[in-house]
Amino acid sequence: MSSSGNDFASVVIRWQRDHGRHDLPWQQTRDPYPVWLSEIMLQQTQVGTVKAYYARFLERFPDMDALAAADLDEVLSVWSGLGYYSRARNLHRCAQAVRDRFGGKWPRSPDVLETLPGIGRSTAAAIAAFCFGERVAILDGNVRRVLSRVLGFDSDLSKMANQRALWALAEQLLPVDHLRQTMPAYTQGLMDIGATVCRARGPDCGACPVASVCTARRDGDPHAYPVRSRRLSRSAQSLWLLWAVRADGSVWLERRPTPGVWAGLYCLPVFPSWAAMASVVPTPESAAFECLPVVAHALTHKDLSLHPVRIPMAGGQLTQGDGGEWFSAARWPGLGLPAPIRKILSAAG
Image (cartoon, rainbow, N blue to C red; front, side, top):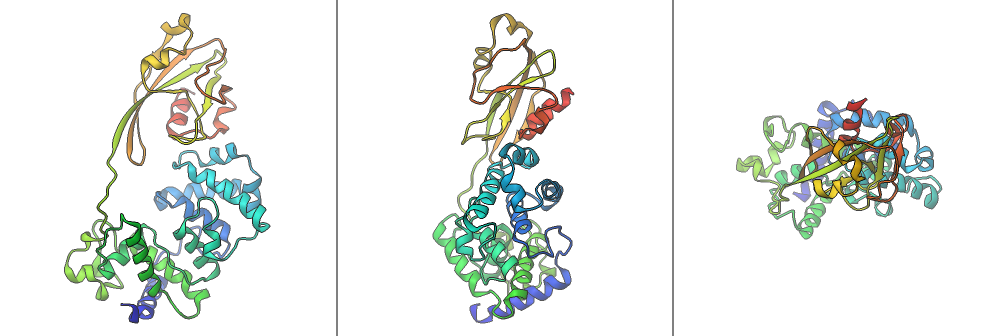
């Protein structure tokens, strides 16, 4: 299909102009900062969820300098609830790297962009294509699905060698002329086809602009693509949360270790069992344990059952982890907290 790559690109570009998405808040800009922010937020997260966080994040950190100068706890607080918190930590590190290494000016080369914290090959390509018109292919989940079906690419994408092979094919389909205009439209068009037409479930082949050259449609089995043999299985885990509270409403929170669940965030002390939790509480107050309803929380590949246990304390230190201290009801809402912990504490207010 490489000989017709330019025709393929032209079809995608025309379709994007007439039928693609044009109302996303991060579109209509060549500024790398909002484009980068949207690309990071959209990793593992739906567009509908990202919109509100994107607006809130830009309101607090309107440009690269503001983000680079911010305290990490403040960044995590604004990010709180969006999940995958390593993204927020890498955003902060990346902003500082652009400031310190490049004088606040984004590099346009995808190879250089890929050296920045939290930016992989596809994200680097998206920034380079959208902002600088670089002729480089992205391969996020939606685009991977579209191209696998169109090309009939049936090699196992669990293997990096096969991912590289698909990437090479994707590069053959890129536009060749007027790249400053065509690369953003083509890149957005492939994303839009994957998001709205060539869906993982229920693809609308009748509305697809590239259906006439699609191998999967010709074979009548679009769900056979992409091929990925290795699937991560879900697991389950129960955790006990010690909610120690003083008479003035202050709660004891600790910073979670890195790596691990909720790394770097403030959290109620976490224990693998009731016995482990009870062992850190002063004996005279142990009778005051109040077991609250279990909270179910889903991570990417794990289902958590959280058991909050509330206990009044006069003060003192709980030495479960590093960075622990008492936070007043006025202070803790401004911390970076995991979404379920924020929900538990807010419900008490």
